[in-house]
Amino acid sequence: MAYYTGSVTSYGDLLNALVAACTAERWTWANGILSKGAAFVRPTALETLTGNYSPGLRIEGGTGQSGSTLLNPSVSMPRCGAPGNYANWGQVTWPAQYHLHVNSGPDEVYLVLNTNVSDFYWLCFGVSSVPLPGTGLWIAGNAPLRRAASTGWSAYTNSASYLTCGLFLANSNDTANSEYRCVAVQLDAAGAWPAHTPTGRFTLDTLSDRQAIQWDGATVLLPMREYENVESNKRRLIVDAGHARNLRMPNLEPGQRITLGTDHWRVYPIYRRNASVPNGGSNHSGTNGWALRE
Image (cartoon, rainbow, N blue to C red; front, top):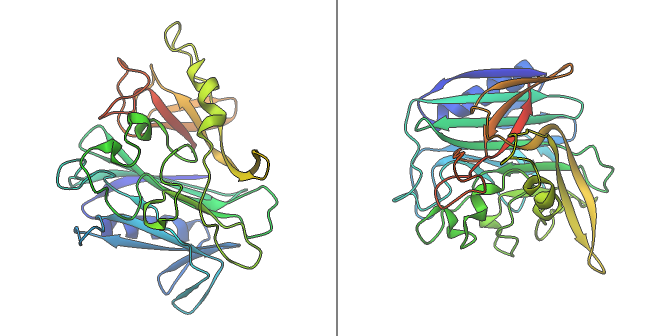
């Protein structure tokens, strides 16, 4: 397990930091594509707003590469960056601090960008440990490729729930419009990506809400999982993150390191921590957070 941190002054710098950390941990960087085992991803830095395409570090997944060509590219490109209308919300200011967790067994990479003191954006990818017909490569980001058409953090969902979600928990944009999806999983043995990606939020709502946040501020690490909707209203597990956990952080500071047994974890808010409103609001994620293995 490896943890890297530092300061960057642009999305291009952030891309360079990602590539340097991954190659130091035995990933291969060739022709603009990072690869290891079944994982093939193309990260791209976009510095300025171009039409409806927002600035950020975005990622595209594939099942292989031929030179600079990504084979069977994903239908969506999740992004690390401001999720709302860029003209009004969440602009990233530089310099910003990054946190990079590069883990193996299973291979998972988590990138968190801390800007404006209290704002946290993220991008991550990995290979599912759950047996699947496809490669099981998953890619995710705090924001979709395109900016929302209306203002506000909740422009995707018309509710504050977007801010309380995080990896595999976002309950928005599972539609045919791939530009707006924030997570995708490679399931098809033939190399195709699914028409949409289901969410795992419903599986953890009750457990998360029952944490004793009003009593003793307990912090319980819960699994981060992704499910697929199948016939007859059934669901099947497709990703069980090996190095990330969902948690509440009423008494933990962003970036704080905690130790549980022999494991070391670093905690981050889903977006912006506000302990006074635990369940989140229109411009913060309450005490909803996640822990990444260090």
